[in-house]
Length: 452
Image (tube, rainbow, N blue to C red; front, side, top):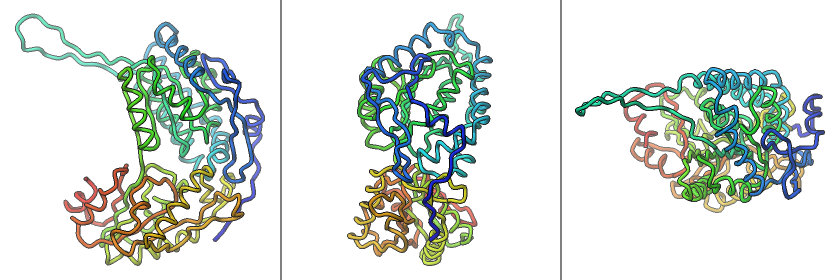
């Protein structure tokens, strides 16, 4: 195993940003929390404190919602043309591109992910999202509807912005999840309160500095840092928020739905993550092994769509598992700022402990750990987990590890022989977000396996 856990140097722009005193963005002003409280932000690779940010709560959410409502109802944002709105959203993509290396370093330091991936995928994907959504500003149109009833009628639909939107984003792709939520809401003409994950707030705060530079009016985007049970709950419960968009755990998603019932606000949720990777007997095994390895080890396995459940046909199962083990052993582990590193640390002590708990639970239920399963480096401080692949000796083993949403680099494996049995096993988890199917010839049976 190739391990490099020393901390590489930051660029000057990233250093300058980290050296600042960090504030929240409310109504175009950078402010402290009303309580004056802050919380620490860690580098997950070293547990070094890299920043202190405001611990916003209900009082700060109230101010942010008030600012967003004013901007939506009476501010210049309410009068701007769709074409001009499109230009502003596009400008945000241009500014991200201008500062791409800095944002990649901030993501690698704050989240732990490899900086190469952050630059290519997180930052690159965010740039593309703003540019793509900019085009929708002028394409959100209604339609006229023919009416057959007697009389003279003029029936039509008109698409209008929802209003004030609360956006709560996760820690696994902090910048890109912010872009996925901000870009369409801005293109539609909404105003926003963004609540980044407490583990990874830095890229959202840095992005907030680009808003004024792009020409986004005050109050259109407000950024409140804080904890889920305080700032997040206050945002979901707020009676003057028209919609909440959330990406995260199924458990929290249920709480948000309950909170939204107070004023019947609209809700969009992306939850869970216990997705299957299904290998058919005719699959190109070199391609399949690479695909299933990337599906679980990319971003330390911290993806909603991570293929953490492997189903390989019994005729190829042993070869697939062996190939996975070999791939895992060649992955370079280390600090995300090292451009040669392929796998960084887990994002927090809490997530690291959860993963170890699931692995131990699987062992007790009879699951065989083929590779990994332990920590890398200093046992007391390490958040590096050895890439873990396991196989179940029978279908009833490893239920907890197999069925619970677990966005980490741990995969359980099971062989299969018939399409119908495989389909039932694929669908036994309620946390599926996607499915990966690897085969050479598409058939009706293969489609049925993953559409469940």
